[in-house]
Length: 111
Length: 112
Image 1 (tube, chains in turn cyan, green):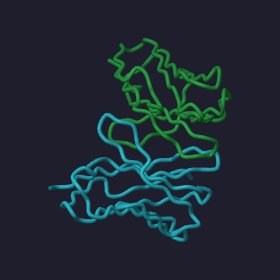
Image 2: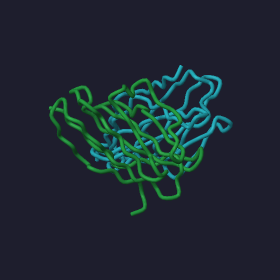
Image 3: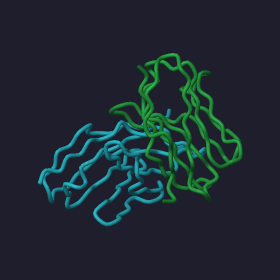
Image 4: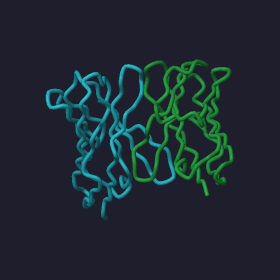
């Protein structure tokens, strides 16, 4: 199966707080898990990505946690800022390099 | 700007008309992908090319849709006899072989 499930659909966080977005997948053939950030009217921009042999990856305020046995991964945004307000998509890539996206999470960071 | 570019950015057409979109990938990337994104949803894979060869097509790509990449550089996506259900953002991405995919700004199609 190719489905990637993402939650929550929307998220409101106070400035300085932690934003957490979760994703789950079923296809164990997926071999790469990127997160994309999308602003209105723009294309998705690659934010951070992880391979299944790693349990955590951190880049600045963004951290991916990966649980291979549970087939789940999550994005944590530390010290959330109003400029982080956007829609976030998790994705999973198969051997053919095709991305399957989650449904998206609309994040609003309140000042 | 050396990113992925797409033209036009917006297209409004009447039902039944044909439309064509263009994508120019990052110059050193040999793979090019087309995705479709409807409002409030994640992008859905349509097709991809490695150089000029079209290697995979989604079942979403009906026979009204055709994509080409004649010289392994830019690509075009044509929709014939457009329907209102074709209204969406059409996204193009490119990558090096098995590398990360970088997306263009998209072409927003509205079928009236």
